Length: 180
Image (cartoon, rainbow, N blue to C red):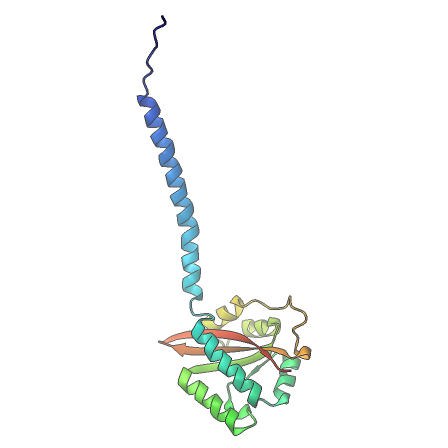
């Protein structure tokens, strides 16, 4: 009969523990390096296009559709944007009153009407020093919407962009406007 030799497995357990430990540390490192940038992006963009801001910009869109004269849309087609914050731009008293109520109740500081593609407005905001840094960051964050070539001012597509203050924080929203 053959004698079976018994191997010492103490060294093997140590190597196995080290390998598993290194593997677990690698997983934690991957999670840490990928998770915290996501949290940073959330903190940066948490004031953009929230449910509250979409609701407010929806009402700004409705007021613009009912109260802005056609000359305002012509200006947007020619220049690329129009500041419609001034309630005197609206042609009827209902539009003026609704504009004033929207601005007062929601602390709206700016309402812009732009072409559907925001390329010209982005250039204007980037080159103009009269805008706040947070507004410039929001406009830079927005996509240009230029890939959808069927949505042009000639076809009646525009965007409404708002800036308002909520709990001492500037918040922003945008929504599509179709003027058919």
